[in-house]
Amino acid sequence: MAAKPGEDERYTVYDVETETEATFSRQSAKSKRTVLNRPLPRWARYAAGVILLLDDAPGVDAVICGDEAAGVRYEHSLGVAFTALMWEMLGLSYDERVLVDFTERVRREYVETS
Image (cartoon, rainbow, N blue to C red; front, side, top):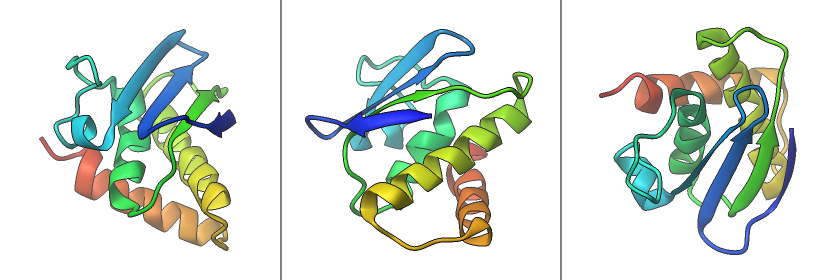
């Protein structure tokens, strides 16, 4: 994962594995949509959920890649990585358990809801 702070209140994530990107705002993420009002890709939902569950997440442009096969495991791994990124950008202390617990909360409260 590579990232840089975004210029505004938008979040752009680019998945190297699928060569797709998703740009969303806090507002569009609430309805699982991009800023262009398209459905948020499943792989980007963890990132959107992390943003929504954090009160002061900074804007970011991020490139994400991994070596998991596409699917639920890959999406969850991206979620943990994105959670770690946000914790770093916010200067919060964390350990593996904190990241996994928060990512599980994102899964329950955002990813798996309709």
